[in-house]
Image (cartoon, rainbow, N blue to C red; front, side, top):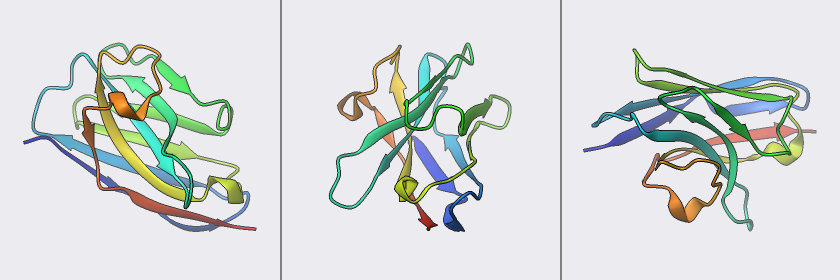
Length: 124
């Protein structure tokens, strides 16, 4: 049974930093892209960042480029999202996700596995 378990969310002032972690288990993730999506109240779930489990190639949404960094640790089966220079508009529930052979797709509908989410709140 695949499990993606997020941690590290919380409350931070604008300009601050948070690091999200995702513990992945239940299968081999070779061939998957590991992603972070987010969903703010009243908005659709949107792609934030992704990393190829095998190659380490990264993908970012324009809104977070230069501020967020995604990484993975293949030995520990962990995925991380370092978030710097946080803005109030980054406030959302952040979800860890795994998509089979995602390439450059950013569609939530193509995700195969989801975590339960972790809340990030950025105050102004």
